[in-house]
Length: 285
Image 1: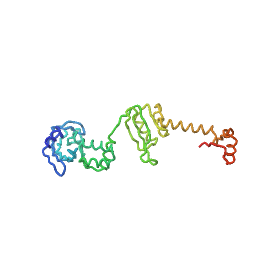
Image 2 (image 1 turned 180 degrees about the vertical axis):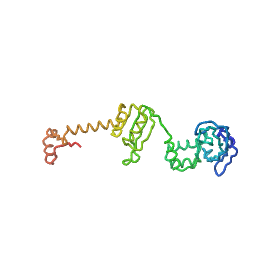
Image 3 (image 1 turned 60 degrees about the vertical axis):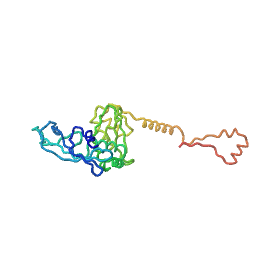
Image 4 (image 1 turned 60 degrees about the horizontal axis):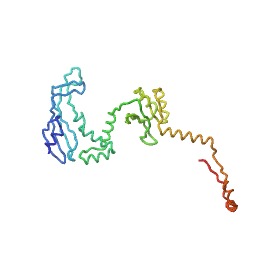
């Protein structure tokens, strides 16, 4: 079974020199089959080998059992005389430099972590054969967020969001056409938003809430941009204006004479009067 797995699990990148099952885990010894590599600093290609470097990494599980890779990678001389690197270790799509997980394993763990909490993701992954702590998953998620760079179009939406309601707020910026999050600012101050806007002069339309910090930043950096209040705040503005208008024209107490009582029979009117039923009054809240 291991021979069949090996042929499809590591296509062309490495030669499997040894494999074994130990303590509910598969261990593979991989030897690089490359004949050349590209320098990560200057980008020049080199085929002059220097030696080998050993490293260990965890990969996707096989049939619910964890997988550990003991990799022997090649090191090459950089023949570019202007490059500051003399010797470098080959890099490929299987594993990144200094990483403890293969790229496919890291991507899978990130997908699980984005669906549930980091602690819940750690339990799910452990059940599948990938043992990792919740703190490690959270740090991986933060690093992936720093590496992500969304494209900024001509139409953006800006709103605040709460790290902790009533105590700390940030700014969320999204693209109105793709509905993807572009960036997250640590606060909702006008200065922070101004610095962000200065890097994107091509923005033409901005939807925002009623915060004065956002409007002042837009007026300074992008005075020609069209500012649009979102539907919620338009409705909120309308209700506020309607309430103020009603307060100005409608008195606080409205007396409604009980004329219907006068049309009743004498017996009913006398009964209400004897029982001390007052005139109906409606008070505006």
